Length: 466
Image 1 (cartoon, rainbow, N blue to C red):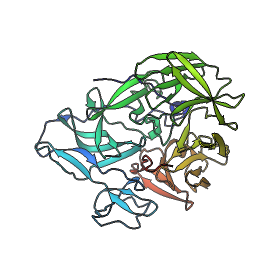
Image 2 (cartoon, rainbow, N blue to C red; image 1 turned 45 degrees about the horizontal axis):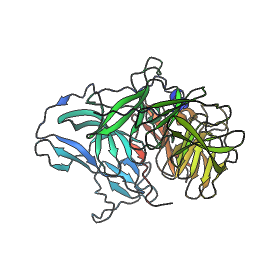
Image 3 (cartoon, rainbow, N blue to C red; image 1 turned 90 degrees about the vertical axis):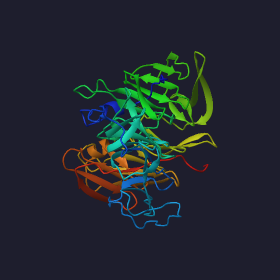
Image 4 (cartoon, rainbow, N blue to C red; image 1 turned 60 degrees about the horizontal axis):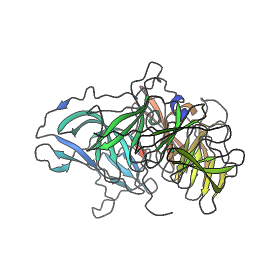
C-alpha cells in the first residue's frame, strides 16, 4: 500500500488554544467494535443521499430549533421529503427539506438496498468534498470482513459514498469534544488547498493533553481512508498546496521548509521573518508580503532553490494572521481578529473591508457564503459573546450579541448551522446548554441537552463561475 509523505499545517492557536484541556476525543481505536462474520441478515452501510446546493444543513428531523416551514412531498421533485426519515438536508432560508436515505450491501447477495436509519452522533464538515460522520451501532465492510459498532465514516458529499476511517488495518471511531481540536477544516482553517486528503490531529495524548498528539493524514485507498502519521513535531505553521507540497515554518524561527509530495524531497531555507509576513495561499499559489515595502511576492520552488517573484499587487498594508487562523470564501478572507479583506483579481488590489475588533476570539468560522468571527465587549471569557458576520454575496456586515451563554464556550465550541445561524455549546458532560444565534433575527435560543445535537452546514464546491 502506497503511503503519502506529507506534512501539513496546523496553527499554533489550534494546538495550544483549546480550553478543553485533556485533549479528550483525540484518541482512537476500535476497542469494542469486534469483527463479525458475514451473516445473511447483515447489510453493511455504503452510501447516503448526496449534498446538494442550498439543501446543506444536515440535521435530525426532530430538531425543531430551526423549524421546518414546509416540505416537498412530490417524488418527481428535485428534492423529496418522505416525511419519515430520521435525518434531512434542510434549506434554512425556505424551510424545505430533503430526506436523507441510507443504502447498504447485503452480505449474502451483494445487492444494494435501502437501510433503516442509522444513529448518527456527529457531523464535521471537512472541505468542499468530504465530511466526517460518527455513527453508532453501524455495520461496515473492510477488506471482505464485516464489523459492527461505533465508527467514523467519511462521506463523499458529491456521490454520497461512505468510507471507513482506518488505522493499522482496523476501522476506528474518532471522537472529538469540539471539531477544531482534531480536524483541519475549511470551515475553521483555510491554509490547505488540498481537498483530496483529510488532515487531523491524532494519537494518544499525554496527561497534559499535548504530547503524543501529532498531525496525521487519511488518504482514500481501495475503499477506505487510511491513516498515516505526517510528523511528530506539531510546533509549526504549515501551508499545503493543491499538488500536496507542504511549506512549513517551525514556531519562532527563521526557517522555511518545503516538502515536495511527488519526490519526498525536503528543502530548508533561511528566511528573515522580521521583514516578511507569514506565507499565505491565494488562488492556489503561495505568497508573502514584505512588511517594509508592502510588496506581495510569490514563492515557488525551482529544483533546490526558493524563487521569490515580485507581483503587481497593491497590498494596502495587508498583514497575515500571526497564527494562521483565517477562513476564506471566494475572494474574501476573515482573520481571527475579525478583519476582513477583499482580494480583487481584476485590479490586483487587497482592500480591508472590516477593521480588526478588540477582544476577539480564537478563530473565525465559515459557511457557504458567510464568514463569522467571535468577540466581546470586554476582555473576559465569562461575558456574553458577540458574533460578526460577513456575507460574501453582498459584502454586508452585521454584528449580534448573544443574549445568553459565555464567550469561553463560543470560543471553544462553535458550529456553523447555516449562512444565517451559528450554534455554540457548553462543555458536553452531563446536562449542558446549546445556544443558537440567528444573525438575521438577532435571536438567541437555548436548548438543554445531554448530547450534542446533530446539526451542521456542509459546504460544497460552487456550481457556477463567479
